[in-house]
Amino acid sequence: MKARSYYRAKNVTINTLIHILLITVAVSCVFPLAWMVSSSLKTQETIFTDTSLIPKEPHFENYYLAWKEGGFGRYFLNSIFYTASVVIGIILVASMAAYAFSRLRFRGRALLFMMFMAAMMIPVPGGFVPLYVLLNKLHLRNTPLGYVLCMINVGLSTSIFLLKTFFDRMPPELEDAARMDGCSKFGIWWHVALPLARPILAVVVVFNALNVWNEYILALIIFDSKAFMPLQVALTTFQGEFLTRYPLLMAGLTITALPIILVYIFMQKYIVKGATQGAVAG
Image (cartoon, rainbow, N blue to C red; front, side):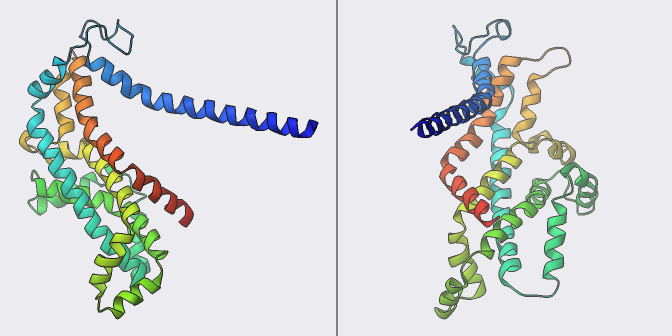
């Protein structure tokens, strides 16, 4: 009887400590977002003096001023175009490459796959100089096509690794059945492999969409014209040499973060499922 009470008290204590730890981590993750939204509704004078999360007099006009003065309309469309183009390009190229590495047998397969995996070890800034030289020689610098191709290249290695891990676990009987129905190799990839890989594709979409949406340095290197710049560049409008307009900057950050948060919420169930399958495969 005493032993049962001891183990019950021990389990309750451990569960309580785990819940306290998880709540602390959750609050520490959510608080910066809440502070950003709260600061976007304050004025330049009250942003550092008013420490409450809910302002007494919210200034929603900050969002209108941030959108208008920052020229967010043009930059917003640019970022949507870059994100959609890069994600579609990565899904097509990475899924075909991963399927080939997993299911097809050809000379140099292992070497090519190792080269893609080795690219994951190189930091992204380490590739800026060769990318710049290559784009200049191809006359693609200061063009949206050049930027999209660079970002596709940045996201390929990780995406191929995730998709190949999934395709390695796909039952070969499904391919045999599709082959008996007259499917070609391309048809098996399109009608069988891609629909089954939906959870992993969701992880690839969110991971790369987040990467492209928040990208800033490569855009400054490739583009000379402001007309091609992504949304992140618009945020520098509110940061001057002697004065930073923090309420408008926070409003701009909120506008910038909102689309990617909506994408994550919309695809959350697929992301959790894909991460679970990846953990089981590992």
